Image (cartoon, rainbow, N blue to C red; front, side):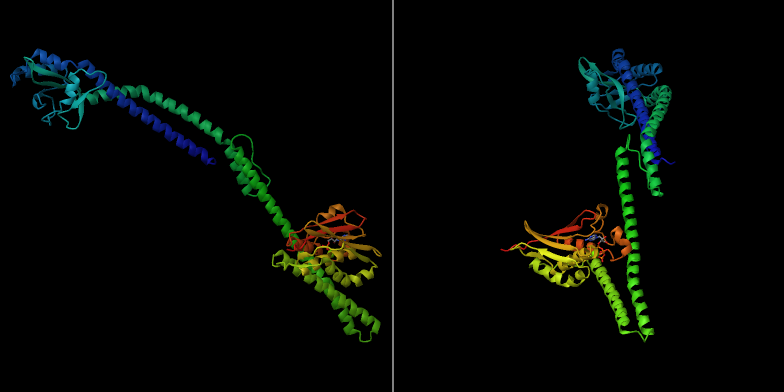
Length: 483
Ligand SMILES: Nc1ncnc2c1ncn2[C@@H]1O[C@H](COP(=O)(O)OP(=O)(O)OP(=O)(O)O)[C@@H](O)[C@H]1O
Ligand SMILES: [Mg+2]
């Protein structure tokens, strides 16, 4: 019972076949009855007329009972199925000869009699059955006239109840005996053909269902056949499966990144903490340390502390940016002025590596419209990298350019540059260049923060670099529109 749909369709098909067969049998039975009635009326339609010719049943409105009884009885001997009635001019039953059952009607409707007498051809005419009020039967009728004056009618019910049922059953059973076998055989053939057709048609569907089931059971690589019937269903399933697999992979990589993050962060936090506690212990134990060593140790503790708080700040900032908790407080300002301020802060670390930082800015540069604190953070992170990764005695150039409705900021160093394959991912959090892996100079959050800050200003950042030839980071800030 695996292919349920197939069994259902087959069952419905069987029901339809049975319904058609029953309909056929019913129609055959009905037709056979009508056929019999029509034949009967055509063959025996003249009985009434003959009777009237043979006897004069009514003379001056008086019934000649003997004559009529005689003739009627002899008629019934020949054909016991007939019932003969004598009617007056309005249809009242004057007398009758009918076997077995009681006659219940006192009067019959004359309308069908007129139709019959007028000789209308081509269809069966049925009149009231005096023994069964409400039912109608085929009949023969003829007017009784005396010197052209209508005296009444002879009304002959041709197919009595008994005869109708006997004939119909006989005829029906005859039809059925040839019919049932034929019907059964055609039914069986149709059923077999239908079932084979359904099996063929649902074959692909069954395959797809099997695929879906296997996918559900964990075989994520299965894909449905996209040929033949139900190709669209197969394709849709395949697309859905690809999507699901993609999502799973994405979740897995996010999960992997999260693990890496925890590993990185705990490592990055642990290192300066270990350094600090080591030196602090030394300072506590060794009371006789000379001034120089003590200063050195204190400086190391101080630097580690700085690193730690910088890292925690960065983590904090990044997670806030990522959670869209930071809304930029935009205002117009001179970007050149801001950069001057930043450069002052970097003076000292730049001088450690003897790196010269220069700013090139055209006159009349428009003001930019952005969040000062965030832009300061972004430029600081970029400068921090330029100095950190730049070569000793090198140069860093910050070039400002007026571009349509914005100001372009280019920060170029002459350090080792960034290999092309790394350029695509350095803006992702915790992603650091290969060469810097061992150096562990930072957490790999700097550029990710820059990217996020620019994103909330609807801007992007790109890097131009050739390995060995320095790197240039370029981004734009919207110009402030006056008026
Ligand atoms: N100017 C540059 N020259 C060469 N490589 C760079 C430069 N700027 C960034 N990179 C590479 O891109 C990586 C990512 O930089 P990012 O600023 O995000 O992290 P980080 O500097 O390693 O750590 P953090 O900035 O969090 O202290 C760096 O590890 C480095 O490999
Ligand atoms: Mg950095």
